[in-house]
Length: 162
Image 1 (cartoon, rainbow, N blue to C red):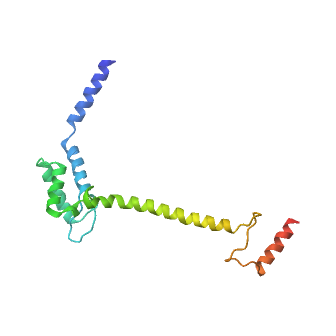
Image 2: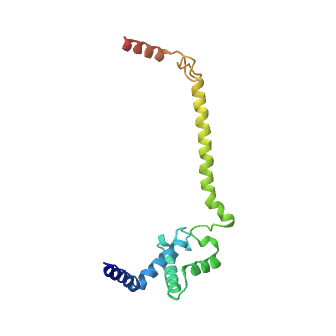
Image 3: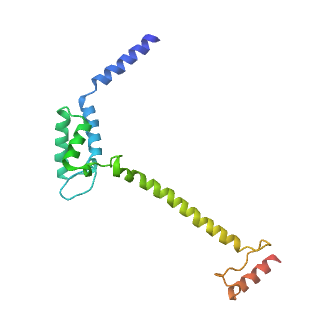
């Protein structure tokens, strides 16, 4: 039983080591394309992996040659940040002023949630004021206390009860 486990481990290790380099470079290329924005002339504003313009095709060729030369993903990304600035990144860095881009959406959700809660509480309080001591609804200022249709409705409901 132990020899079978050992042989399976050796087989898996051989398969991982024998995996073509193109699989590893494709993974690195996908990481690069997800990390960088396209810098095309028409300013499409897409992440490089989603862009299909001619500029993105040229950028992919350059990135692939840099990967084949032995540079890491982080080194290549840093080169592009040095050349184009932080606007080349598909996501803002998590430091400095860019930290607000990560925090503000969540803060807005929390503040908005408290605001909705306050509004709903005021509506509930206002609804409770419209109920008298006997538990019957009182006429509110927005609803007419009597009218042609309310009298007809009352008559119809009385007829149904009897």
